[in-house]
Length: 587
Image (cartoon, rainbow, N blue to C red; front, side, top):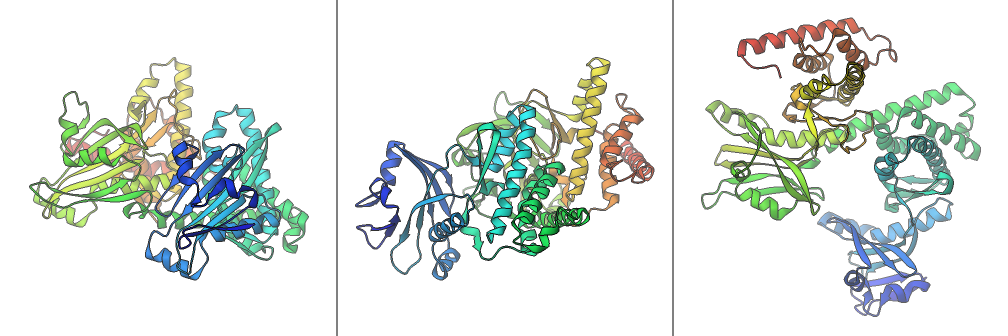
């Protein structure tokens, strides 16, 4: 390696591979400005703490990571440890020396002197690679079904081999998930995996079972929500086989030979992963309420006769368009030609378009009509406002991998202590109708096609409600109009479990629980059942089919289904009677 120092010695000093010194550095330092002006460099990630560029030059492609110190805490940490670029550079060299596939560093730049500052890391680009997370969620679903199955199985085996080799080499990754693994599919559909984002790596002696299990739980956070049980079991078998063959951990050498221990440890890993996931979700539920690289606060104080504004916004929503909306929040509802999707005494809903990531995106704009009576004003002091509840709950459902439109902004207008109106912006689900219209549309199909489509939809909806409850979420207003169904021809994202084209909306009534009681589950199911009470298109057999799938009848026995049936029926009749007394429709 060659040490190269900027002419501005007080700024950066560079350490680069000699073969690339003249290509990367000029007498003034890094050639980034020239690469940006010529179009050779493209920004691929940006945030307050770091920016990542991809640079394509003749004969060389590489990534350039610019690490910054965005706050006092980061600056103080820089006093006690090397720069992030130095940490990742050294660990990449150590990981590669231990035989684990990873990135190849070409150079680093650090602030010259004792004061902590910005740093740069240059790494060789791995061609035809992409993050494993995006490959599994976006690329793989586009392949033919047979190829998807073959690749999923091979990826599970290849990942097991990589993680086993990593643990045998004494490598612990504090942020081990699918986004920090790169995949390249070589000829004959053989996947090659590489470990990246190495500043969170610790290197030492080969990992024992306790440390290995903790790292596997970290990895399983992502895969437990997105990979099926068969692929997770295939990974576990491959991991145990690879660790036993290496012989570095004597306890693991018996795995694969003693089937009872093998299955016991697999169940233990799944149980610990689930407990860790629940803690992880609870910790992230309030992330959407603070300033970070994903969300920012909206604040406008009362002035010049304008009401005050406060709320939250996604950082990739166009700020100029949002500023125009904040100036007159009710204007979209008044414009000529506006079609109102809903207009009631409590809320008004319309569709519009706003730039998101510089792309015009269809959005749903909802106004929650504010204080109408002194009781509403008093209640606003004691409860979370509907727009903010929908914002928090929408992000909470998405954190739990449950299908809900992405919230883009939530804010309220106020004067003094009085709340005027609340507003919510969410991404619009294309080609979607509510569940009632969807079931009515099935009636227009030939009888055999209608019955097959209805049964398939019942299975998918039951899985969705079951997973919502399993992930400790409830929806007290789980009625048919609050479930959207995307038409089969639409291109909707694949989710971890086959929930089909169903989406949960109107999330004011969503709650997240440490423990979800059966009584609350019954109330949710009864609210959904009330939407189809005495519906001519659904038979008692259809409703029993839904309950059987929800209870996983056959996997865990019959689960006392008759008790559930009677409780749901009792709660449904009570709901029907309440709505009849108040004159409110059931759906």
